[in-house]
Length: 89
Image (cartoon, rainbow, N blue to C red; front, top):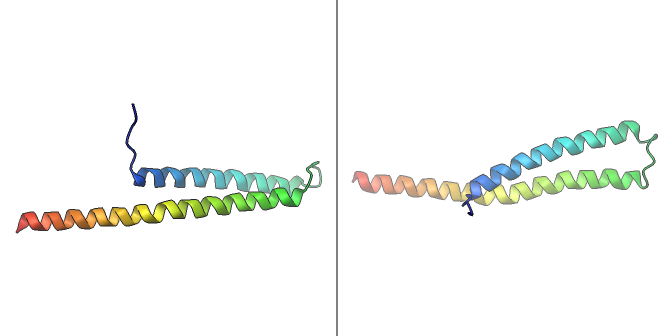
């Protein structure tokens, strides 16, 4: 059975995942910063740059999903208000 999921729920879930990944990646970055000289990691600077890029891409993706969803929520709310006003008349 397929459940219908609203855009708002998708945006909230994406934001939650982004927040969790951002924290995880930040912890990983801190670990690499603190222990980089002891780690045998090839291209350490490239790894760090990829971590930063991943965090930035998550922010961009969340913004792209969230903006249209918020706009739709605003339109839905405006429509409900208009319908309520029509019923009151």
